[in-house]
Length: 114
Image (cartoon, rainbow, N blue to C red):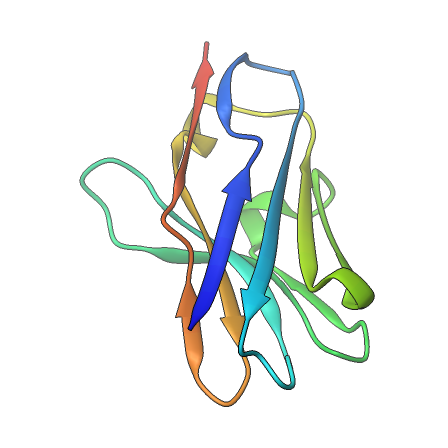
C-alpha cells in the first residue's frame, strides 16, 4: 500500500509564501515523476509543476518565476516552494506520484487573501 502525506498548506496574505511537502511511503519500487496539481473552487484540476527522476521540471505558465518544485529522491519527498502568492492561487493542492502506478495525495488547502 502506498501513502502520500502532504503538509504545508494554510492561509496566507497576497505576496506571502508557503512551502508544501509530500512524502511517499509504502510499496513504491521506482518513482519516475512527482508533481503538484491544484483545483480552484468550481474549476477543474490542473497541473502546477512536475519534476522527473532526472530533475527536469515543468511549470504551468501562471506560476513560472514564483513557484519552485524540488525533490529528495532518497526520502521520496517532493516540495513546492510558493512565493509571491496571489488570490488566484487559492485552491486545494494535490501531490501526484508516478511509478508503476499513479498515486494521489489527499489534498491540502491553500488560501491566499487579497
